[in-house]
Amino acid sequence: GLAAPNMDIVGISRLKGPVGGKASSVTTRGTSGDTGAAQSAEQFGSGNFNPQEYFKDAKILGGIPLASLFPSVNTNQFKQPGGLVPSLKSEEYPDKIKVPFEFTIDNVQKVNLAPVLIFDPQLPSKPSPKKSTFTLKVVVVFRFPKPGDPTVPEPEFNATGELTHFQVTIAQCIRVSFNKLRLEKKHGKSLSPDPKLASESEDGVKPVEFLGALKFLSNLQELVGGKSDSGGGGGGGGSSSGGSSGWGVKPIIEPSTTNIKAGISVTVPTIAVGVFSLSNLKLSAAVSIFWNGDPVRFRLAISERSDPFCITVWLFGGGGFFAVEIEASERGVVLVEVLLEFGGKFAFDIGIASGGVYVMAGFYFKYGIDSQTGEKGIYLEGYLRMGGQLNVLGLITVSLEFKMLIAYEEKVLSTTATTKTISKKLWGEASLVVKIEILFFETSVTLSVRKEFQGETETVQIAQEERDHLWLVSHEARPYLMQNTVGSIVKPRKIYEMLSEQEWAQYAGAFSA
Image 1: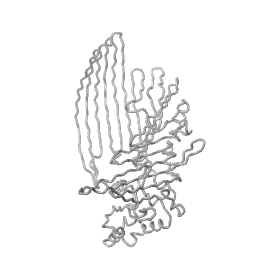
Image 2: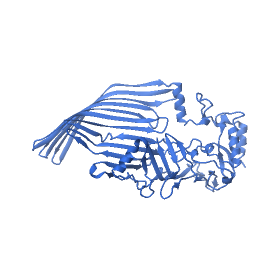
Image 3: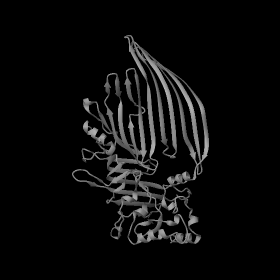
Image 4: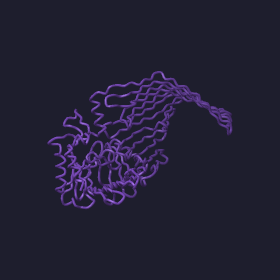
């Protein structure tokens, strides 16, 4: 969600409970194995708290290190209850143990990960800027088994995270301004997000602003008189147009349970010069910020596959769309889609009957990276479609469409530590749809056939360099899981590999009293 702390417990504080920090004993064992843990515990005991050691690789807004938002805390601030230093202390009851975790800070730091991400902890609202605050509250409840029932109840987990008044700039091209981002996860229920973007009318700040190479979109929006006011966190935003000019500007504000998508869509008016015309051309740019920690994604598109642009020159016409998605991670470009088609259309009207025919040929290409497995896939398709329609006196309508395509798909089905299973398929399809309408009666018939020309599944070996890369990506390249050289990977050790019986007995004895 908003934050995912990942802590190694290195000591116990009388004021704050378990203490997180560097635990070098996670990776190695010996005379220097506990040095990091001892130093972290000693530092915390002297009244100094370092968020970098406590939160480690926890991420916020899909790519910003959580620890980098907070300054180090000194002795004077250490004893402030519930605030600058995270508190994790248990509360015992007759039927349960309650473990609350609280962390609140109003001195959020700016994070510059340019050119990928820039986090600015203030909202330049009018008449005065608003500073960002961060609050994280987690409560875990462990209930005791009922008398005579050996079943141990499942722990109950409730969490609420809130970050206020901040801006996120992605790829130096788009800036999203938030008044508030609140995520709540109650036990047994799905994540409940409550994002609220800045309001241009209330705060004097655009919720979505384009910069650099995309600044022309903001200029175009101002030129046609459109506003990008979100009006809060719900809905798909308003729409605006340039009146008689034909230009249309529509803000994209789409919050969901998994992410928030914010951007702008610009509709270009129809251009007609003699026998040439260009219609339905739309430019859109949007950024998706995920709640589950996935990296931020930026999407730039020219029209959409379900609504392509159209170019006509006399009897001949064509169209298409283009889209690319870029992720703020080592994956980079995660999706490329291209559709282009060309053909001819002819229509007639002789009074008692009207109709038309068309013949179109097209090409579709898709390259993508699976968000779950991280594997690449390619899909190619070439097709021919033709059809026609005849209407008699507005009472009887007959239409038909024939489509034939040949497609190729290559994707990774599964991956192990040393091998990949790859599926490769080449096939063809053909379909004919006939539709008849007589007054209020309507029926249609579809005939289709599919032939697979070549299909195979093969297992290939993964090179050592790629295996190391896959392991690092899956473990987020945590430094305490690696040796000094990246080439030699050390996997997490079991507890019995890190502690001797004597060390474990000493540790357990500390809690026996």
